[in-house]
Image 1 (cartoon, one colour):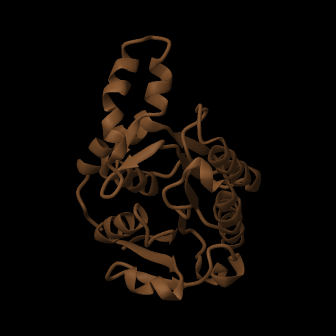
Image 2 (tube, rainbow, N blue to C red):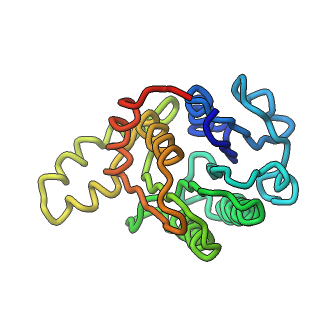
Length: 227
């Protein structure tokens, strides 16, 4: 059995797929869930009933040496949801950092967002505050910064792929096009899996931007799923 992994947001779009993948690779996975969502926890994975906004409701289930993966966030974020980012996203990462520090986790994994960007300023501001909370706590951490994750129910940006291709041809626009590029759900899950299984040295914080997230699909698929 590989190391323990505690996931907040583990019943969602990315989290349910990640939990299943890590379980298949031999990790002991615990997923934080509200009582009403416990049935959505993938089979074979331990459900922990608690409130993602309240560290005291789940702190005791986070173990020393765990990898803590924080995936809680407002679904389908948009500029109109600025208040929800402050109500859900920010307190959830603050609670997660508190629980992780109390438990003495080995590695903290956080899905932030690509920045800077010309839009989504409120969302970026909250995610940057989340990154700052992790740094302030001194946690060994991996920060992933996707822009948009393509997958079931999340295909609309495919229509603007030609714009990305055009931007790549203009040297001044190329860095922004790469930083704000699209990743698939498979690429995201593979990057998260790689991050869990390859923590940075103790005390370091590693950032994976869009090009790094895309690369990790090759790295993880080449590794055998062995405990």
